[in-house]
Length: 111
Length: 115
Image 1 (tube, rainbow over the protein chains, first blue to last red):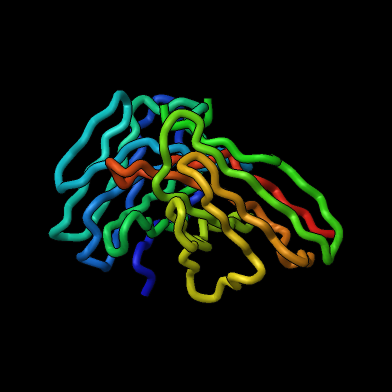
Image 2 (cartoon, each protein chain N blue to C red):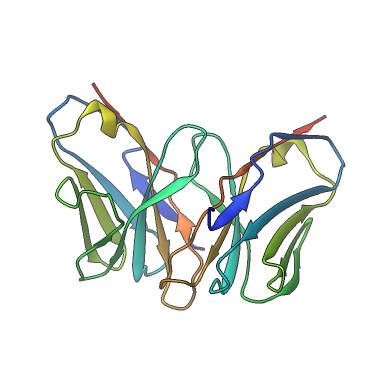
């Protein structure tokens, strides 16, 4: 079993839709949780990070962590074609500074 | 803030030669830098972690004599692929983190093609 499971998709939604991206993890030692966005042939861009359970909102993005069920979510409201990318969840905390990346979900937002 | 650059962005080299990739944190001091490798349509694979002034810590299965990492300053880390072979062709990405947090900020990546 992988430490971090993420549905690779692909996920295709119309512009303006609410997108839900999810990961599950098995290691209860994870203490902090990152979401990255990666465009094709580019380095990942940090979108959101949180160090605790609960919700964190930043503009159209909301990150949600439920440590009891080991479940991580990223919600995108009013999705735009420019949101089309691969989204990677990345929990960490088992070894100093290291992140464990999910497989990534490919998202396409069509006009 | 938190900008990381990589150079070169794309390099082609002949089999048997060595290639050096630079990773720089432009507007912050990076106490820790990471090197990843990514194959097409796959996630990031951590190769090694380096702290300024210390030897790098390599992940299991990564040949430290082949992938030489130097973290000489708080803003610069280099990855040298020695005696490159076609199977080393890949997308190499570095990231950097500050002393004050666990967030990693990534560079734009370097595409290596070995012919």
